[in-house]
Image (cartoon, rainbow, N blue to C red; front, side):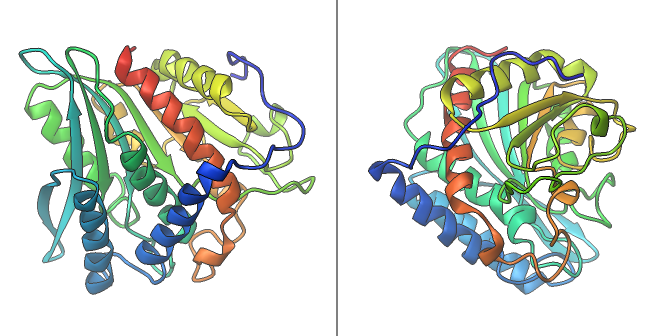
Length: 310
C-alpha cells in the first residue's frame, strides 16, 4: 500500500526561479477568476462565467476548444476539452488530464477545485507545443458537475466524458484527476486519513498525494516515480480499495468504471483542508508557491506520459 518508486523529498524547499514567477501569478489569477463565488447548477450564471473564462484562456493560448454539452435540471452545462495529437493513422490512444470546475453547494470552491482548474490551465500553457508520440493523443478536460448531487450519476461531467469515449471505442491508457491541490501545512498533526491509511502515512500535511485503485497501480508507480525525479517537493502515493473513504471521490472514478487506469492528484481535501466545502474556501487561503511547484512537477510527468505511454 505504501511502497512507491523514488524517494520522497525531505528538507526545505528551494526558492522558485525567476522564470516561475509568471506561473505563480497566473495561478492566482485563474483561481480568482474561476472560483471567487459559488458556481454550480444552483448558481448557473456564476458557473457560466467560470466556463467562459476557461474557454477564453484556452483560446488565447491558441487551442481549439471543444464543448461537450448536456442538460442538468434544465440548465445547459458543458465539459471543455483541448487536444494535442501525435502522428499516425487510426484512433490514437488517449492520455487524459482532467479537473472539475464546479463548486460544491454552499462553497466558493477556490481549493475544491479552483486549484485543479488553475493547474490544468497552466499545464495547457506549458504543454501547448508538446508533440505526443505516434499513436497517442493528449486531452486536457475541464469537467462540470463533479460535486453532489451529480457525483456518480449520469449527469456527472467526467462520467459523460468517459462514456462518450467508450461509445467511440477509444482507449484511455492514462488519466490524471487534479482534485483540490492547493493547501499545505508544516504543522504536526495537520494531516488526517481514513483507516487504514492513518496507520501508514505521515501526520504533517506538507505533501501532494497520488491515489489509485489496485488496477491502476502500475500507472501510479510511473506517475509518482516521474514526479519524484523532477520535483523537489514532498509526495506520497497510495493504492486503496474504492470502498475506503476518499479513494474514489473525484473524476478518476468515472474512468475506473470502464477499466481504464486513472490516478487522483490531491492535497487530500477534507483530510487536511479546514475550509473544505464551505464559503471560507476562498482564493486567499491557497498556498500558490507550493501549488506552482506541484504544477511544474506535473508538467514533467505529463511530458513523459505523452512521449511514451504506459
